[in-house]
Image (cartoon, rainbow, N blue to C red; front, side, top):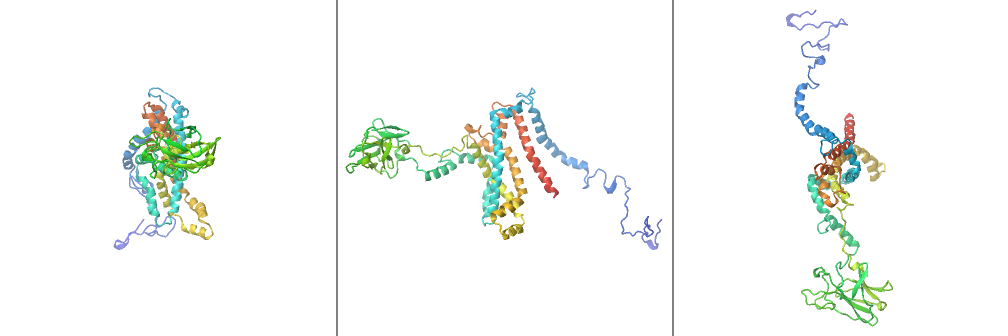
Length: 475
């Protein structure tokens, strides 16, 4: 029982149950809530820990849940259901559609190419991103370099596909890749001089096998040897070629002239050197006896050449190297290289993405560990391999898993870059899903089975990613 103090003073708190001393107002004591609608701990019924009413929270989540169900859950469920039906969708096909995934050659090629994509594209992109991030960390223009490398991310897959369709064009005058390749090849390998040149029946030359031409009669010392050819466009002649002329040489030598037997505008005589006809500069000439080359020479700007006395009685041969077709480069979009070529375009786009994420992780590394390793005598390679890479492992896993999920659904680049002649060789599952579902001979049963297969391939990667995120959250 409490007693009130005179003068309106506060009532003295009752004594504690277990002690005779009174409890001061500041001491904590049991709190009892008797008001209706409250439970233990003072939390109102129907409220969450944050005090939000569950009904209100459900109302706010309802639109998102409806969209999630309509755009994700329903398509997945219906695709699984449709994958067990036949092409018309009226009969039950059982596992026939799934059997077709592993028996049809086109779909098997798509599965094989998807495996190549998953292994190569994320690995190469992540490796390049790591290299770029580490190498540009200490240079002044590192930010500008990173900007240039990351810039392809601003380009859509459609635009990137069009760009690389032109880059891989087979014609060196249009395709950048072949222009560079041909330039490097021609630097170390001499190109042919006159790829289309050939003799006429009235000329003293005949086919010698393997693309070469030989004289019909053996050459004799002191006699002029004529080697006329046609089939060269005058505009393609060497700029420093001079008008052809006859020549003489010392007794015992074999000499002659090789020229373009064509007079621009007409009026020339066949098998005779006319005033306006040019010499075939650089044409290689060989003297052959018994199948062996005994002497060789190169035609001058006016087409004249001289062979030593050893060429007396030999057949004069123009080797096939004079007439070989020029090197046109590599068929980047052919059946063999089309998949690596498209992967190259993907790496061009996504290496910048990997670089930016890895650079962010690199910026958070404790520098004292790196400096301590250097002080202890470790070189840069050892620091990179034993400290930088292990500490960046979580970031590298994030980048790798993200790119693997992205690669499994690759479609745009393959569809745009691969020409119709090699699209079957570059086929991937997402492209085959489109072709099976919306092609000329559409089979929605097989298309749905491919969609389910893609989902099953993505789930393990997503599981690893979610597990890693939860593990990071518990730290």
